[in-house]
Image 1: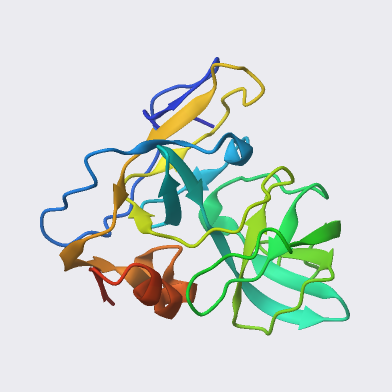
Image 2: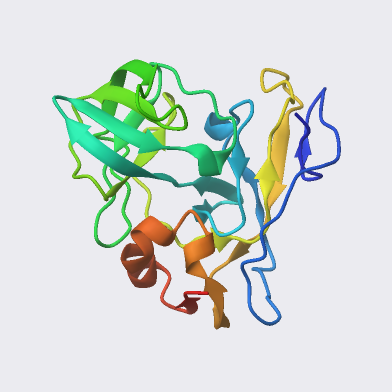
Length: 210
């Protein structure tokens, strides 16, 4: 698997895909950032339009995934939008508030992971976190600890692919948009499941279904 041009590490190669999501001419913030190293997960894709928190030139993505079923302490989730991200029991599940706030500090551990028996595209995670089917929750890597509220959308794809995330030189850069009156095609982005929360958190980017 190849990596996008803005991901760098020992095994990075140019490549990656892109889904158009922006209407008109976009002006990202003049100062972007580097991806929070906690989110350097091999195989991960952070598509354009991913909700992000940008502070001190560091980009923290919100990995918002849909819960398709919830029963007996197991959440069935759809994480395909984030590429081949490899989940394990070091990851956690966090709630997403109506204001977009991700409760990372109180996130619940994932104690077991399995491919869903009815649909191999879905994943069953055993966790103490609760959510109703149709809602979205955030996947959080082990070392992340501070709550975040998104303050923008990722302008460009970040595809980590097969880079060596353990290499000290590994990393990724990105640009962030927090003001765009011409609109974002919200239903084409990972933010669609938390669109109302993103409208509250990033009010100056107009959301359009298209």
